[in-house]
Image (tube, helix red, strand yellow):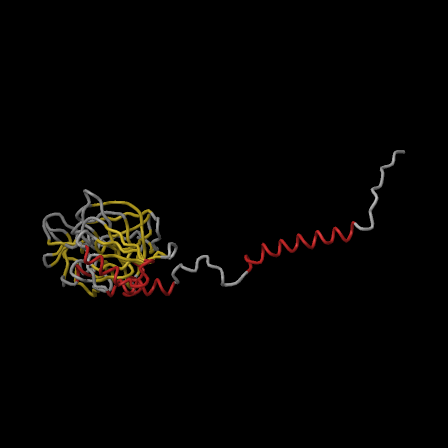
Length: 302
């Protein structure tokens, strides 16, 4: 039977090994200690806090510059301000001054066209009209046995009673409630039972990157993507509306109030935008859920 030699163990080897282990542990301790250090770490210390971003968002509103839309991008740690083509260098400087010492968290962008409300005087080819205004029906809703439609508040502020169509126009009914600015939505009651009032949608929440479609009485159907939520817009004329949905979908005068949806999910109704479909543009939408809550109404599927 073969035997394997047994290595001899000098009496001095154990203390030497222990010293080596202690030395290694000491090196490891020195290397690891900074990673477990507390708030002295510099990484991320320059990033704005949630409170600072909220202050910057509010400061942009106080600048009173027209033709801008802004929202907080929490992931990027910045407030994004989009200025339309009517905003000149002086106005942009006003926005920068409003940012003050938080200017490092300001992302100032430009876009072509003008942020405007998209109602219009009523020529031929319409969806809903009244008092010389043409806009678009958003969604049909109900409250008990009564049925209503939702459209834009900046349209309905001017219209006590509505019709559908221009040639052989049929009466719809009166504007019951309307809000603009501060929001952009209105409730119109169906008094004419002969007017069709189809449903087909359930309420949903918009999110960035979501595919969506808009329909309007001027430009018909266009699709694109949601690019921001919680957007505040100060339109030309100075009217301001907060908490809007922004999408890279064109829209033009007459499309206001029209629906924004994704599949069978109702997302919002058109408030305004740059108003130029041949060359593209961006548009803004009043989210539908706050409207339903404000008026105590419900979408219906059939």
